[in-house]
Image 1 (cartoon, chains in turn red, blue):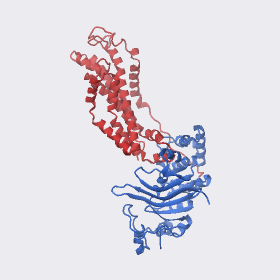
Image 2: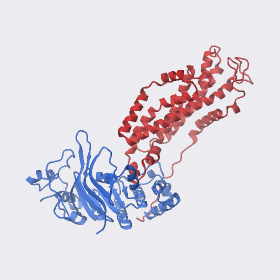
Image 3: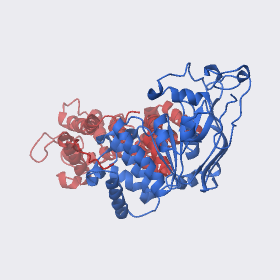
Image 4: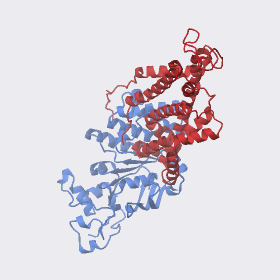
Length: 281
Length: 312
């Protein structure tokens, strides 16, 4: 028992380099949405001459009502980011909670929860969002609720199947034998192990919500007074921005949508490549 | 006479199989005294581990269990799940087979060892860290600080095994169950493991239930041996008596199949639990089987000290 043990393996280092660019992009977007006043040269409702060309005063020109397009772009970031992240977070938290409870307790509870999941799964999302948007007072919070409450079922199913797999692992049995409570085992033993699965799910949900928001806004099915990148493209389309060839109207918001979604998804992909599956049971 | 720590009475465990139920454990009774070491031996699938899981009450809810398990007079099957969470770990601990997989891969070993102490309210985190460091040192780790920072997948099987023992030792349970602790260990680690197993019962006065198919390990560490076959106890008694002078042909076959005793395997295979033979479960493979062995199942008899399920 007294033999000295020599150790060879070194502690692994997580490389932060690949995260830098996407993180920087997202931070810029978040910073802009947190304090648009600091970045925008004008208030979004201040009016100038309509359809102005690009100039030093209006670096992206003005729209049909004479609003400064760059200021609009800056102020639109808040709603786009908010709707994306909030509904992504909502969907993932509901999905993880249901998947975890369902996979851990199995039996009747599992049947009931998975039944509910299947029902949500067959609801067509965009049409329901359109109907709800038509009946409810449209606004960013309604959109967050609708997108969040309708897209957790994929997360719940994936999490449940992983929990079923992990819960029969020996270290979970071992944790039970050490007298840990069910809540503790679920949140501290199972959850960290399936965490690599949650991060990309969250990110993809967020990206999906951003896309859905843009599409709904483009279709004019959200609050038209709500500023977002999607509504900007929509307005450019309806108020002759496309016909006049005003790329300065629709291209910047489109680029912002693409960049923010790319930044968010690339974090998920880098994260996934870094550590694949922690255990194989 | 030492006081009885664990009493298992007429334990039957049946799993709902596809089609017909699978009787994994049938009418198993035994008692374990404080500081006593009992080895449950038998082939794979004879129900050894099921007994351990029944005692810890870790079997899935759809399992049909009858009989009783009493730890210090507490009826384990009558406890709520919340009450069991307070009993597990503190009153009975378990060391698992394949130690590398019995530790959570995402936590450092230090955290995994201090958490149980803090969760059961035994001491605060600072004190827990000190105790963990001491126990790791006493288990032969030259650098407990490094060990506490390490992740389980950085350690060898032997190291993980000691960590698991440390986890059990830190909580001082009165009953320690070791489920196939020798699986995946090198021969030179076996000696250490035996020392650890003996130290558990000698130092803390804890009862040890050792589940193994290694007869040598059972002979060296256990006071008593219980031989199981197809979910039944075939023989039990003091380890030196049972293994030197077996009362049941199956035990004789097991002893005879050891390399040092000629490496003679028992003919045939153990029966499927859903398709048990009539009469004595062992008669199809028994070299001494008589006509009545096909029809009658003998009771555990002979004498109190060393009962065996055989009439011959």
